[in-house]
Image (tube, rainbow, N blue to C red; front, side, top):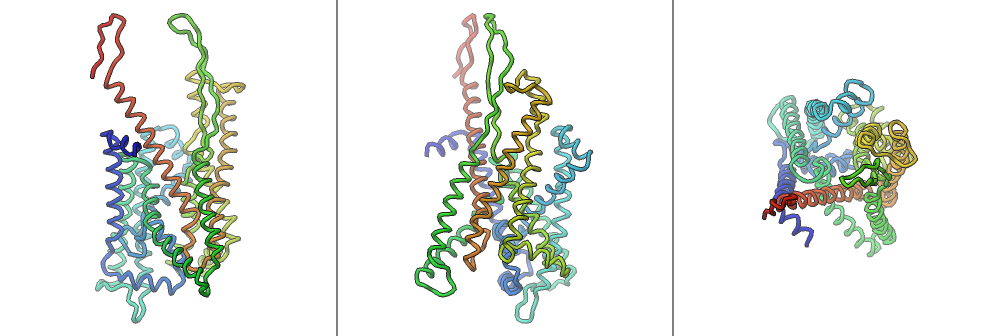
Length: 453
């Protein structure tokens, strides 16, 4: 209670928290605004009959239930994530984009963000057109999915435009939360979508547990559910511990003489998180792995459908697992290289007179930091993969339960919650210092300065 009281007694922090809650409320309201001309009940029944329920449950989970409602927010934040991945990958191979990211500062990053928005709009329109075609293809006698009186072409264009506008609005909500609220807006929107779907998953598990206790047929024994609960508790503890773990690199600063002629040496440390990439590598990996399956639903390419089937954790778990682990490790290293630059850190340390004991300033410091960071990133990537995979092994033995209510969902929820709390703590500390500086000032030597209330 004291923590909440400290948040809401600070005017600036209270505004940020309330702004974030309002943006999330608008997002949840938009999930229930459906595109006109579609019978959502028939759409769900048609997708379940077509066997694509596993994939679309994943898409529906990350969109907060918007996909199966055929909402204007059905695409969620997926187009923006895809566009971000494209530009980040291109930044590693295109010198001009790499220069914008690393040397142009804020202006360069803003230009890349603008291009990312344009690509997001294009991808959202194409994906919206594909989803409209998918809805039309599900029309069957007695099971009309599309009830619109528009021509098929007009319906596709109208739906694509509506979904593209919805995706751009969701992207705008995320950017506003990041800029004027608390936490990372994109991660918080995914967090909100998963949390909104968790009650349905808990209800499903509870109902199956009751049936299991009654020895109902085609239901796993109670021991499987106890193992699932134990795994979730262990995953929760591991996530909390690893997300809060740091490797402290000691830093000493050159001796400086004070006004009395006494020399002193200051010491500090550079905290490197064990999991520097946070939950983003898992989000990127999930988006990439399920992208072929998403395209396969909109096309008639048999080879793509067969290839995407091998990436399903429900049917080919032992193929999906190494692919998921490999992609997660790749994005962990890639995302870490973006958020932390050893060369820039070593250069700033050298300019400020700091050095790591036993390591020469400059290039050797950069090499040392890169070596430490590589080891931490690899350990963090393995942790992300294991936390995502282990509950999946248990969930695959429970028929009828959405497999994504497992390690990945829990990892994202807990990771985003910890990151948001860390930012709240930082903002509270900053506001306290600001308040302290506003309430008083140091007296001068002549004693004429006075404290201000």
